[in-house]
Length: 417
View 1 (tube, helix red, strand yellow):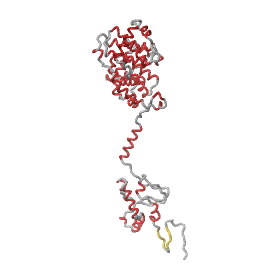
View 2: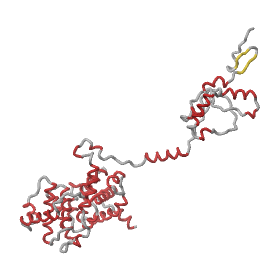
View 3: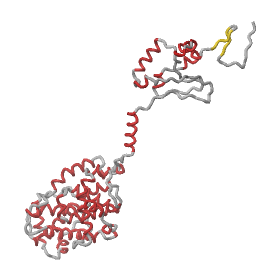
């Protein structure tokens, strides 16, 4: 018997005897399909150009041929059923229950109309998690300010945090009562103290001494006056001896006693200076070294990633605070942080206190605001008050004309509103 083959017939038809039988679509692709579990593991399956992911046709159509296709479409063996059961335990409930639809399905043989495979729907918790992650990305980071000094042995990067933790613990021992001028002294007052320190700042500048020496000198004066009553005529002698002790502790080249006699216009003799040195050391029990605002100021300027202008501005405001007896009540670390914050506001014209500064100082912007307003007041009166030693010092090119910078008046104005 001859069999004629029509090349124009569709490929899905085959000859069986005298009859043309329809080849079952499900049998051809049954082995290539994967279970829902395999598809949903990575959120979707690959797209096949000639195959559409389809569900069984409704039996309500009453089409017997369709029912046959249904049964052959996805043959399920015991082994496959066990695999599906195991996978279902790892899937969300909404994935195991696909949405019901009344739409009919068609088989597309055109490769241009590629169907979209079923994919997992994004749940609300995943969306919220994405929003939180995006917020974390734009959050201001805390800068590692010591990473550039890892190869600098003098920076002691391994111990620097422990050192400053110890400074904060010890700074309270170097502080004095803010009322010592009333309780301990009867012949001197706050005004006299301010005149003494303003003069010592000029002496310190003329001798070209280290900044640490000035801060330690003021610390020695306050600690001594808090324990020992001093006559008015001896107050300048206390200041000279305090600077002499500070130089012996901090400087390489120490001024001699004759230099101190000269700058005091020979008001005191050599014996008087040496006797006061003994008295001061015995009164302080030879405890010279305590954390001053200087050590904290250098660390906080590093946290603020300062340049020369910000550094000079911070020291200018800090030295204005040294003159004022009112600032004795503030801890050295707090006063240093407030000076850096106020200097940034003065230079940039707006409030600025980064997360890095807050982390290393342990002070927030709100905590520094009251002290910052006081410092701005000192800055506003620096050029008009009688004691202008600090203002004249920082009005030179050596200190980048820091004193001529406009004070941050907006900080004071906000508190008055």
